[in-house]
Image (tube, rainbow, N blue to C red):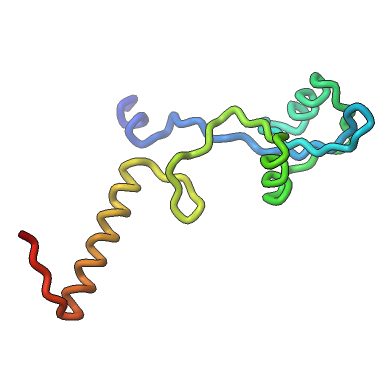
Length: 119
């Protein structure tokens, strides 16, 4: 049973929610995006760093992108190296997608009667 869970990826760490924290730091209004399990944990993270928290909400894609550009995005799970249509995929899935693409190219060449020599 344990081996099956490892193969199926049941023990993989899923990322927590990204929280947008708006607050004041040294008289400047800032927006941080923090990965945390709850809004309270995100609030504590910001408070420990000397930020006077005003509001904590789930982060939107725009807030996440702007925080990443400004260097105000804190994550502890790494981003996926391989993505397909914006979703993370594993190495085996990526290999099969490449094989499917290659098969599609060969099938289209065959249907359109393009001579193909493989030697």
